[in-house]
Amino acid sequence: MTVARPADLFDREEEWEELSAFVSDLTPGLRIGIIYGRRRQGKSYPLRRLAAATGGFYYQALEHEPAQALAELGGRLGAHLGVGRLALANWDEAVSSLARLAPRLSGAIGASPLGMAPIGGGSIFVGPAVAVLDEFPYLLERSPELPSLLQRSVDRSKEENWPAVRLLLCGSAISVMADLLEGQGALRGRVHTNLLMRPFSYLDAKRFWGLDDPRLAFRVDAILGGTPGYRELVRSVPSSLGDLDAWVVDEILSPASALFREDEWLLGEQRGMENRALYLSVLAAVAGGSGTQTAIANQLGRSQQSMLHPLDALVRSGFLEKDDDVVRQRRPVYRIADPIIRFHQVVRHTRVALFEDHRGVEAWADSQSSFASLVLGPHFEQLARKHVRRVGEALFGVPVVSVGTTVINAKHERAAHELDIVALGPGTGPGRRVIEAIGEAKLRELDGGDLERLERIRTILSGPGNARIVLASATGFTEDLVARAVGRADIHLIGLDEIYAG
Image 1 (tube, rainbow, N blue to C red):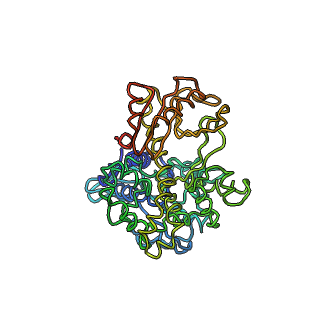
Image 2: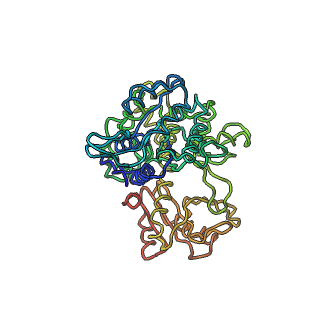
Image 3: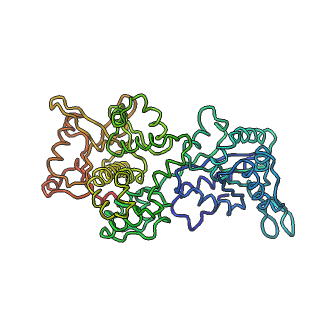
């Protein structure tokens, strides 16, 4: 028996199906689900609706001391049960109370989500009791015993055949939530649902923001990404490219904007990242184009070894992505994972005094060169790779296993060629790479010279005529390149219209 999806929930079909299946599972005992993701991804929104739809208990924790948290939880839980405030002496009692919630029942008149017999007759079992602890890391920070207490309740509920209870733990501190599942964590092997709430895809973000022009949708996505919560923090949506500059200055880069220091707030809420200067410096280096561990270390004037911990922490927390060279499988490249982090590092940080002095128009104009090369350029490359991954089978006639980047050394030219797009096909595995396509993705207009370069690289990689060639441009293609591509099944020209086609 599934839970009907709320009509006001945009997208998130897969996430809702997973949550619905979890709370509809009739297996007796306490089962735990974990939902995590960066702040403003819309985690609480479906959880509140899930609790309402199932007559469940929803509690959003605050940064309180344990005694305060227990008192508040006892008050909320008692009100939910209709018994008045519960005096919870410690977290052991709190966990036991949640783990022993009565199942959902229904009867002759009305329904009883609290497990009490309804008016007018007997009752029948409908489903497990549902409880949500939102902002769980706030509780965990001052009460580290919580995972062990939950572990004990899960185990006892199986041994003693307790009623079915589904407890959902939610948090924005990605590394903290991930730690619950890893290594020697108390909950390892005892979590039945592990749901990472990601930003909307660029296609869904375009629909969510109501943007018709792919050029405008691309720029908004390069600034804000697919985080749905940002829509509530701006007063308006740009209606055309002509509105974009004023919108960015007024809604994103104004000191009064809620998004003005969003990158710093996001970093500040992550536990275990007290040395903010170091982590911000690493992010600045990566946003500035230093993608390897060596280059980042050189930018910061540190040893390569000293970069291992901050890079790993930023990857685990969702601030950086670590991608291996898809052909050589070594020399990983680090990229900014969240567009708004990159945008602020490139545009605001170096001009913060101008923005704070309300000289936003001047500062934004000054940033246009770096905005294009360090924000729009990398973002377009990423969208082109996602597009090839999404429609690769239709383009090439074979499934695409993965899409990434590589660097090809041409010894006879004494040069190294970077490829923005490398699509691997079936048969790819350890020690073997089947290259279905190689490509270039650039903001600028592409021409015949770009095609010739890729044809030379294709010969180095796999001999003439094997891999397809993809040329992706946010601006367009010269007449010469379009003419050369006509009638050639091995050449694919991709623009923003193709990338944003549904």
